[in-house]
Image (cartoon, rainbow, N blue to C red; front, side, top):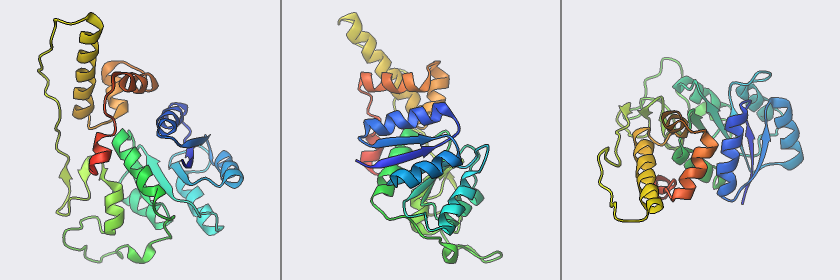
Length: 244
């Protein structure tokens, strides 16, 4: 079990991440701004920080720089943003973040990033590993990022950064939209079987995004997560498989 600090000004995201990571066996602390994040970090010395970039008082990149400048960046930090770009990801890692998650964050990417972060030390600034302005990018590495960081980033903006041969849109796969169900069974069992297939289809269609599935099905995200757990939907299948 690890102690994880979740820093985000959106209460819904804090609550959802907290519930998911608590179910994974971690102890979760939450902060809604940089001031609270500083206080929790100094008090608890968390094993990992999930840090939102866009916050109303001090943005996440500035807080990351501050921790690095004061010697307080002795824990891994995963940055989160709903407006992620390759430039943002590069800037975050330049100042010590070990991974970047684009919102809406898929469950598989979240769990994989957390698992990877907890088995490696906090990353030092990697200025020397980044391409200089005007320098050619390495073949098979269109982002110019080190291989270790490309594997952490996974996808960003719908493009696969770890494929090794350019920006390739992620391919959708999963349950088919037309399925058959056995009706000669108790109503509750038949309903649960249908709902499980229904949610598995939409999770695959939306590439694992809980936010988009919640919007599609009309359920609040926390309620959706509980429903999926109740139905026995395998939310960690991709994590155990080692790829997204």
